[in-house]
Length: 285
Ligand SMILES: Nc1ncnc2c1ncn2[C@@H]1O[C@H](COP(=O)(O)OP(=O)(O)OP(=O)(O)O)[C@@H](O)[C@H]1O
Ligand SMILES: [Mg+2]
Image 1 (cartoon, rainbow, N blue to C red):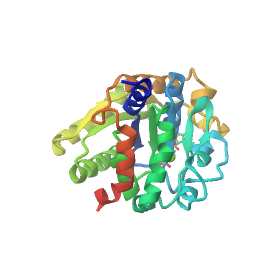
Image 2 (cartoon, protein in one colour; image 1 turned 120 degrees about the vertical axis):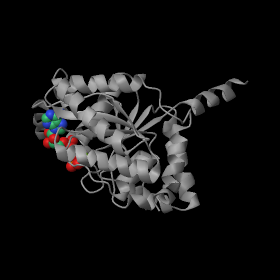
Image 3 (tube, rainbow, N blue to C red; image 1 turned 135 degrees about the vertical axis):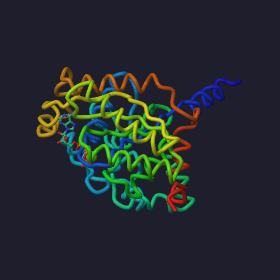
Image 4 (tube, rainbow, N blue to C red; image 1 turned 180 degrees about the vertical axis):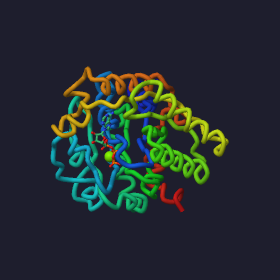
């Protein structure tokens, strides 16, 4: 094989893991965990892009204390390239800001589809993870981003409402769309016992009613006052307080995920993601 061909094959084979972060209930820590996880992965040498897909209340930029000028909506209007929209956060983490009307992406023309794929291709060579921070609830956008992701992470607290809503989200994805594998991350729990209790509760209910669902306790994050303090200071807690309990929990989670072999996609994570992105609408009908 020529050197050119070999390096192209290598690039094509690079697995980009696309992982959604959802919860059902709002305010349980999705955005903070997504950002901290991205930073922890970046610290391990991974190249990470966060897609802030919380369309109503996008706030990765607020957590970072930066103001974004453009969103993917500007790309849709043909006024900006993806590279002009994405901004670089700490440790080289890339952030793609949210926009309303994301489902428009599923109805774009063939030309724009090619444009989207070719622009994303530019990142393929040096992207290891795409983390998608979704909105609360079980609305079409949340379902959509879960369906186009290769791996799904569900954040849950020890409040009954959070557990019920996480269950509802997984039920919708399993029963209606046959998506059955979920990482579970208990957040704001007092200690490991509580994390395991939350996981056990979810597993028991899922086991009773959702035969195909398989849950994986990927990590847990303790309640830690350093998190709200960092939110108020608009600095990610993972950087402002790297030794706090929450940062340690996130670092463990990052390690766990990097050891996991992603299901299914082989080397085509990003391409499959893009194909699903632009044809995902059908999946929702
Ligand atoms: N481990 C933690 N310890 C203490 N407080 C936390 C922890 N995780 C999150 N919080 C607090 O919970 C609040 C909600 O967090 P965040 O915005 O990340 O949740 P969310 O799930 O993204 O919310 P939304 O559904 O509105 O998008 C924040 O004020 C944050 O300070
Ligand atoms: Mg959020």
